[in-house]
Length: 344
Ligand SMILES: [Zn+2]
Image 1 (cartoon, rainbow, N blue to C red):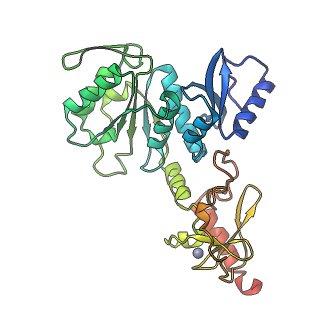
Image 2 (cartoon, rainbow, N blue to C red):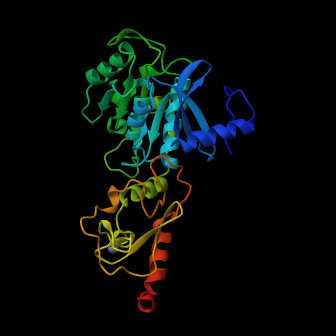
Image 3 (cartoon, protein in one colour):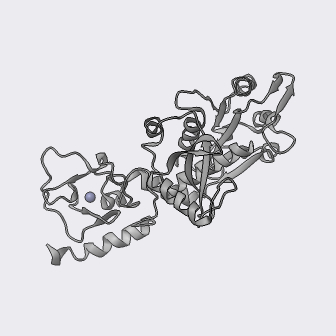
């Protein structure tokens, strides 16, 4: 299923063709929409529907685009987070992205910045702590408005409620980012066409020392919470890129290397992975430790991500999961462990 957009001139079938073209291009494709040069982005909505967002971008060439999005780990979670940020940007509303550390919140915001403002453009990065001063916050807000820039408020939940409340000044009358600000410390400010503010928070109920969101601010942002389980799954998936899944279950990080049979093998336990369809599978017999001389570790091969998220290529829709979670992987490894005595 895909969300049929108002800007598309054509039938639903033609739109679905466009969706698969953007997918084949790796999720981002330069195009012309309503006489404007845009980057089409294959987003993913919360109910698992594909969506195409046309992003007005200073990026002109395929080479420039590649430099910005070429290395992206194009997972469903990444697509959802970037879709959310872009939707808010188009509606001029302030996004608040909540999720566990290291799931790629900042990365999604930075990709958004590179696409919308260009890779050379700088943005204002306010890394909040419990001691961030009022003056620093006012400076950041002033810069975003006067420089027509993007302000990323990182670790917003490190701020106590009193300082979080300073950002209330950004709330406009229609639930958008304030068009005009009149304030004692800030004076008079007008929002530029690209002025934008985004927030990042974790879970105060899980992470020590974090604060809840001040109620006045909670009403002024569009809140998107990435479930904790999703973060956990994602985090593990990312960290097992090129490492042995069995040793990983035992808490060890062992790089896989290609062996003389052209499987990826673990030097610690002998587990082997073989390319299969779009991903990799664990072989039901152990390797003999014959690693190819001078070979590079599996993590340097860019055509796959991990045994957990067995997905080919960078920028490919991650629908082909070999394992959806740790338990499935564990059951799988256990299953072939029993066969070891008979198969070798
Ligand atoms: Zn191993």
